[in-house]
Length: 476
Image 1 (cartoon, helix red, strand yellow):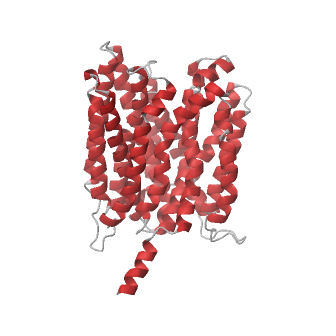
Image 2 (spheres, rainbow, N blue to C red; image 1 turned 180 degrees about the horizontal axis):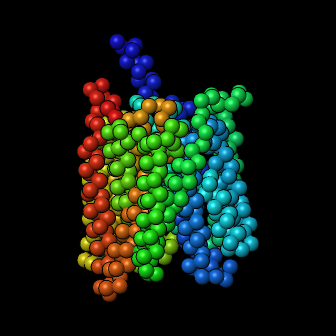
């Protein structure tokens, strides 16, 4: 019995090879996240350089988001057709080439086009990387393995404004893209050695891989792009009918895809039958609501410090550092706790901490002290770190190993849609509050109450997560 227990403990341990794999898989995606947030900081500099309006420059960010929505559903099929390792490395290579081209852009249309190239790689890196790590870790280590991917990601939204501010002030906006190159060029040869070789990498064509579902692609990708763009622009002042029409058209296309995916004899881009698994469905609903509540409020926080507390870009990034530190600690602890006690208790505790952290910001009209906001940012960060990795782990643990690539695409699509919806809700509420003339503090207080409510609702699907089994491993 002792020898068996020791062998089981050895299998459950995060061995150095798995840790190296996690570090490699997160290096490029974290650059993509920093890049995305830094571009927003550099918008004024880009507008001045190209002698155009901020409205036109916003397509540098909006086009990136739309392209990600288009390519993300392809991640599962590409992994099955060409192998997950080769697909991930190709995605990094495309992201690297896109970054170099963005830095060399001679006009705004060229920059937007090159950002679309960059987004093809950026949209594939996360789901494919998650699938690789989930398959390598197995059910007993999935929580801790996911935390390897989650910890650095928590720093990216904070580092983005800092990096963007420093680059724009000291160098040039082009260096936001050039800084990606050395890291990505280092990651590629390391990944070739660290990542496990695909089973078909001896030169044979992969067997049993179905043809690409072209009809599903024609329905799902444009549908997702329309919904994401419609929700992203819903808080604008040009009128509500255009975003509503886009969202409606996108939902109709997605509905058509659901009907098609249930009827087709081919392997669909995203297998909607995965949602027949109760654990997977609960995790997807939770990820959707997490995107709508936690991640969208992360966009609200820097705006609050800039507009209500009059902090500059660099100071805002520094003010948000406690949140990133809390998120790193929370993610590290949550992965281990989820593997031991199951995701339900850990995610519930993380949401409670997030609610406590948001509470002080809902009192913005009362002008809470900076030290109190800092403490709440730590709590909020701990909460974010405590929910992300265990929720992803619960989803991956509920599907079979061969279903992992398809599940990764579905999870990332759902999370991105939730983030778009939450951002649309919060920006609309904030814009309405600012128009009423009660001052930024009242407007931000109301918006944070909405974020609080969305976070509170997330407790509902989490209640359907499976608890830990008697052997201490998650029952997902």
